[in-house]
Image (cartoon, rainbow, N blue to C red; front, side, top):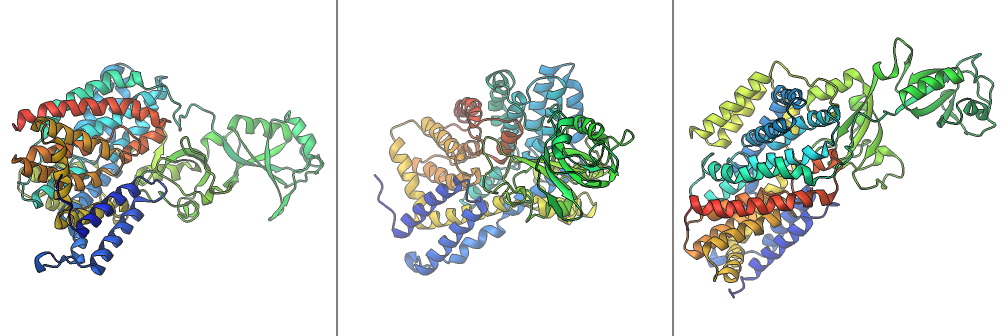
Length: 610
């Protein structure tokens, strides 16, 4: 067994283990966990200086992650992806898929998997999933099959494609940057695309032919086939049936089907809902029901029906409830959005969007912390908001790209800026792929071009940057620096080698892939990558082998986030959209993990003989 590192090394290892523990706690936001770990690391080395051979390790070194080239590149690519999303550049492709599905469902599904995998090699997969979710849900509704059979395979296809280039995911950029810092040659954009393409064939075939059969039909959380519930207001008209009648008589008129939530009288008075209460002209009855039932009640009780947030526009034959000023829409809280980890009240949702949230759906988990007040519910990624707003307001939300509005019946927008955004994206990729510019430089220039051409605004830029992603990268780089400087990385590598030294190098490489793939489904894949890359590099050195295949083993393993919905942010989004259970991800994701593990274990030694 290798000798233990010094106290600073042990402390760095313990802090790393504690960081992994914190990252698995859903109740603690990952940005909060990251900040706590960073503070502990800086204070620890400030109060207990580390001075090997008289050279003090300055705590300021742990701030270098904020200016690291990888973080700059990742942030710039997030903004470019936002530009592609908000301009609707990929939506014509999405709509083409939807139109072809009815004629050739199996072939269309294969094309969806292949095209999303290819696009994910060059774009962050989150905007791709955001764009395709409403389209595929609409396709499923119109063709009368469960959307749950195709949403998860589509999401996993983006993860397969994302591991094929250096810019496919933020994880890839991190691994490449850290390996270069350690002395390995900098991997170019397509250096490992061929091994991924070969291994990915097995994954795509599994997702196409087997995965849909393994997924049980689940009820999508925002299927538009179910009756929509509207909050509405009945105004008691003078001389109408209800004027002067008791509440009991009015309810009998509707065969007690109508449920009255509140009775309003005057500007501020609320009347107790007793059966004996006599209703007066200009009283207001607050009711929730389907549009058909509300129209029926209007006739039965002789009242005037208004939308709850548009009382100046009565509902009539010329202005029906379901086609007038107000509509319902389902909005998904996405990871990194302005609503995640905020309440509706603190986010000033109603004032900002002139929209009313009627209900909140949280998959498989009751919402209890708000005491019945939706405005005080702390929203999480994957929550679905049932929202009532004007048609123009809903369309504006769709065009802005700041929210995932799920309504497959409304045509998705395609703005005149889409060709410009696509041209900028291809230029950024071309300059980086040809080696003319580093990806950090070309991506940052691409952000400038997006702003100058008004493909995005500064507010879009700010919303594109994910604080959780930034913080996890910074703290992971800081932990990596601490482990490397104190010998913690070398000790972990020696432990791995000691446990596997009698095994062939091919088996060691395969074991590294499997180990990292297990870790990445529990903690952040960026955290697993930053910690795993130096270990892989050190293992290769101790075995006297070239580090590149071992670094790629970490890169591939950290992208295999298939087995849990918390493995990657798009998994959470799909988890809520498809109405999945946690076990569905394990049922489909574990076999996919094993398939990709075996495939890479066979393919890597072919391209990198050991």
